[in-house]
Length: 399
Image (tube, rainbow, N blue to C red; front, side, top):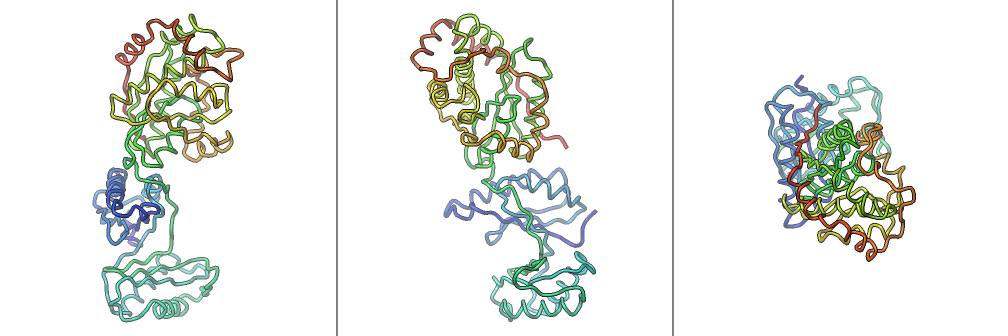
């Protein structure tokens, strides 16, 4: 139901404030992303920026907990404060009555210590910040006998912002931070069914990158359940990144060709290079400027520094690896936080785990890999055929 305790949400941002003359572009992107994220859940609202703040004014029924959860997933938001927003007045008595009503509605007869913190942006108000703090603190003490002032470590801060209107609030809910998605161009995520790549997608989107994704499917060696698992991961991830276009590539013929014609200890490296070449072509076709992978140095044989160097050598666009210095435990914690972990550990194998050599090379030499790849005489044709037959799924989060 419409919550008369609050009629607005104050959205604060962090590093956007350091963007100088370009700050408005990041603010506008954040406003756009907020509107898009919450519009399915609100019938009457207004999102706008004012004096280095973003506000969501609400004039209809809303589910408070659902709305907070949606806002917490939007990159670029540093904190969210449910606000009682009242028209500007220079009548202290009206301000006093408003904060008394606010404390009564939110905290009732609870026991707590508090401190009042006023920011008087509008200097027309006849009292200074210290005077407002002192008088409002006294009013709360008089009207709520279970309260006590603590200026050093209070249970609750009551924030008063006097601007062209007046904000009253007492909570700063942590947001996702980072930069608004869409402010850092587009990248293509190589998305497997494992733990790492969804986390890499989350981390790079936190820096403003808009994602498309590519998944390599090898039927009949990988089942439709493996493909469905990746689609589900994309949908979970999209609650943070926005809608994801997932390119599903049938990799069977390419993988069998590599298995038949290349040294088995080089299978993983050559397979990864073919994936990167396909992903680069997709990136060019969708105007993406980078590739993103979930690799972490030393985690498996294909993720040694020499293996990563050899893999990178087959493409000409940047390859971002947000997890490069993370250990597995750190990656798992993020996967659990963003809700992908339980899906990632479902026991449906992807194409990377089907044709694995017993003793894969860990220190590949580029010259030797290039020599081995000469056996793949129809590689370019196979790549084009695989891309031409791709399946595309648009993935959006399902509540």
